[in-house]
Amino acid sequence: IVFRIWAKAVINAAINPITALCRVGNGEIVKNPNLWGVAEKIAVEGQRVMEKMGFQFDAPNEVRKVAEMTANNRSSMLQDIEKGKRTEIDYINGAIVKKGEELGVKCTVNEVLWRLVKGVEHGHH
Image (tube, rainbow, N blue to C red; front, side, top):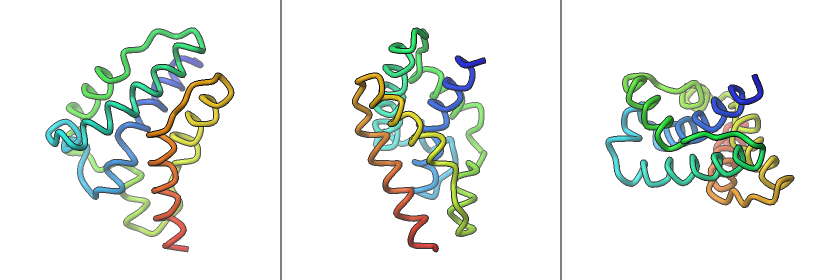
């Protein structure tokens, strides 16, 4: 169960904030090399955290698969941002950053996206 929770968090961390900040559907992440470059870095950071926890997880590959399978979807985070609502960013990228700090894994890209989404939320409230 712990593995599944972290795997889902890492996948969502690599998809949701990018779609929310760039206002695009999930499929754009794999179509646009600039967006994929960011998503891949987020995924690798999450994978390193999971590895420190003792889990094996090919995060970039899993993120790509989910983004392709849900290509036409608009993430819940994008929908929340559009409605001016609070997002679940603290429980996704925020959780990865905090766990990374605990385990000595730098999660710089996750932290940047966490702060950017928080900045957008703050602008709405």
